[in-house]
Length: 130
Image: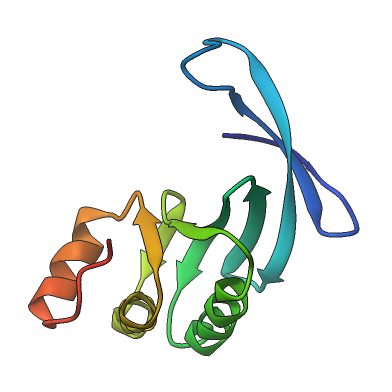
């Protein structure tokens, strides 16, 4: 997805394909900024029936507690919660534990889970991110 701009109020507009019924078309969607630090940016896109949480950057010991809080807050948002890890560039064991714990406690769907994250989760005998 191509980032166009971030607005001061924590909204960004992005362009992406509209879906298989209209290939090649572009759409604009509003993404609300929930959290940012020097390593990580977390945005929320609300759609009918689901909310998508996007994690962009790095999760490690320094921001793992903040990610846990964001996930807990997002759990209260109406609709199915989808957590997209497509643009996660690094995650340490502490971050994987945060995601795995959240997965155990909530009805959540993780998408674009890197193979390395799945493998470390398996080695640590944590629940799989699904």
